Image (cartoon, rainbow, N blue to C red; front, side):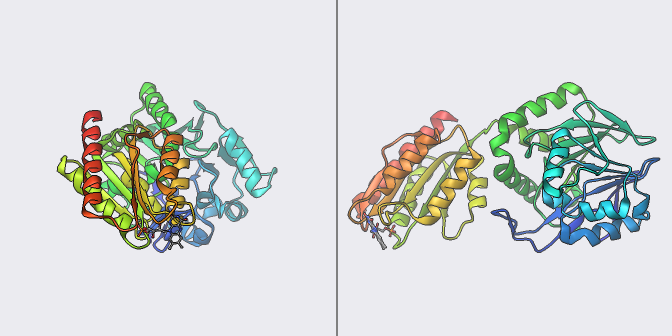
Length: 397
Ligand SMILES: Cc1cc2nc3c(=O)[nH]c(=O)nc-3n(C[C@H](O)[C@H](O)[C@H](O)COP(=O)(O)O)c2cc1C
């Protein structure tokens, strides 16, 4: 690839990872990018670096603009290794005057790279550093999504370098939001939010309020993954607000796992009942749907209907996986119900109900257990359950 000037004398110099398919358990079926930015000013400043195997791409891109040894400052907005993996080697090459990072950033850098001797310059929210014609204003964004996370805002360019916030895992040859398919872009942004930022939603709400109160003008949001926002800034900020408030649509998610298709038959009948109530339904068999896709669909669904047959007195393994994953991501404002086929002891529905109660998902029905293969009457009961959930969704929306 090649560097791209995103604002006068500010360049994207990051790397495109076309091949990555798994990002710590998140399916990145369209790859990702590790964005880094170079500001050419009296003090030449590099914002973030890239994942270790992409060091040469970063160096190559910087070289097209300037000899990397001429860089004065490196800003570390986020310490996670997709943005710092090659930092030690870059520091060897650049020998920067300053490594600018948040207090938690310094701590995390030392814990990762064990170098107390690097020339850290610690900045807190409200601190500013002049690099010549430009001033960088720093905003700590703790736990969005790591303790060290920070925004760098360049007033003169109305440019917010937002670290992972507003990111998407999507490898493209384009660099800007208005150059790609709008619906796909927002789908990737929603997936990123659902899988990375969802548990920190109260902090997202506060940050959006704080940034609003600061009255800073934003013409461009340069995130560390995916497309840079320049056209759809109000839309992505509104989407973040909706996701953070966990606003739901008239939509239900039926998620299930099955061995011999009995629970699947129940899932389809429940979906049928939901559709009869005019509710949009997504039916997801966990053998074919990745956990990160399930969470993305859950983001704006009002109801989750969980189905598993009983295996060795428990639930099926892919269902256990999604429950563990979901628990950490802490979706709120949901209603739910459970279903499943069984042979002799039939614990699965009880376990799914217990899980939902722990998760504060409002269980609106005790659920349906069917012995082995469902009869027509059993499936009618499932349709009725679907209708009941549909009515509850419509009441709550
Ligand atoms: C390996 C295995 C273990 C099972 N363990 C239990 C069990 O502990 N308790 C129970 O009620 N049923 C158990 N069953 C029976 C299934 O729950 C039953 O066949 C059910 O109808 C399967 O539904 P499905 O087609 O939706 O997977 C087991 C089935 C298999 C194949």
